Length: 293
Length: 288
Image (cartoon, rainbow over all chains, first blue to last red; front, top):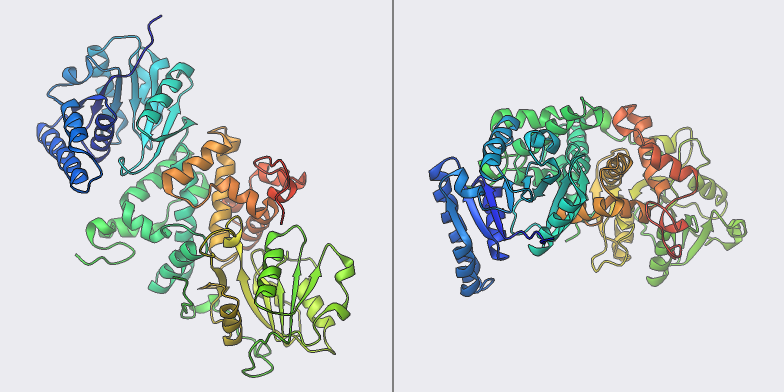
């Protein structure tokens, strides 16, 4: 019995997450085929990785030898076929749209029909079972949820659907550990672990803000208390500004609706108002707090 | 850096009614070491013991009123001039209010001027309902200290805004960092962490992941200082449940419903580190 080993990884989608995953994988010695439907994005993505590695070298966090090795392992895949045909692990990291993901996987399956190939989605909010519905080897389909920014965040959630095999999970565990990251195994449920359990961190803070009215004093009271008393690195409002209020709002809505409007996940009109006003946090210079440009 | 940051009074009904009876009866006199402090608590509560050692460390004369030890309920053991009562007990509405009982028994000796009251599971309005007294109640929560007493930087006490100067001075004397918070039910940290625990508990009940996976995920995925289930074990599942019950009784909203698993653990005496078993099992109950 030949032992299946992951050596070549296809990363589909050259957005923030895809690039982070590709970068980490090359640094851990994996051949990475990076693909994006838009050639401009792909080119920009490769440049971003090159820049990031150069920065690490300048800060003496990476040797130039390792940098060169990593870059030599990174391949720009012009077509989907180029990306997946020789891949042992295919990681999908395209925008959060079920139809888009399903269509992409459907096309990809045609180009790689090996039994052992592992297919994963980096989705944070869509059912793995739903995304993997058309997979010919459903026991090889799973979720592999990285956290932003990928190079810095140690955690990876490995998500199993009802059909994912134990062998697949164990191989993904090994893969994650080889990236020097910490895997946790979770069932395919809305929000998996982190995005579900974290909901009250924002939800309760927003509820308090709603009761007392939004004021600088109240924002600071809650953020200060959570840091000084609770020991959290960032208070809820600072964190929402960092993540992006729109991103946070989308996750809350996703979990809320996925659980058929479970009351405790109810989104806040305060967040909705901010999103409507374009006050999304740091990235727009204003969220709950103001940020000097 | 811990701050003593003052919040402007919240508007309208959220403003804590200022009962004119609750003014310090002795002007600007600070809380002195000689006057002594009465400390009320439960033997199983690590914070009761922590406060005791902290006060002794800074040279305060402490009278211990331990709820589990009737022998300590003796006024002769209390500092005769006791100016401050610190009640670490998680009082619940409807139960005898220990700080008031102790304070009122001390009449004829020196009246305590200030009562530092743990208000994680009841509001000061509930505390004071029907009590005619001249004590100045200062609501606080030490929830942030649970499970984190060994930290190089001591977590702050949360204290309700407009802390009397004498109490501020006293807390500075024992080098206790403080963060001022508005009058929110269960204050800030305890409330949010209790809700995180409840959510983690729901994930556990749904078999989303193991307890260890949940705690690891929240520490490594979103940088929480502790995993919620371990945090609950450190604070006491009874404390978490009391907070959730309090929030539920105040708001009457389904979001605050305590998870069944949490309720059953508490009913069965499985309270966390202090009983040797909570969400995790401890070889020995963690010494207070």
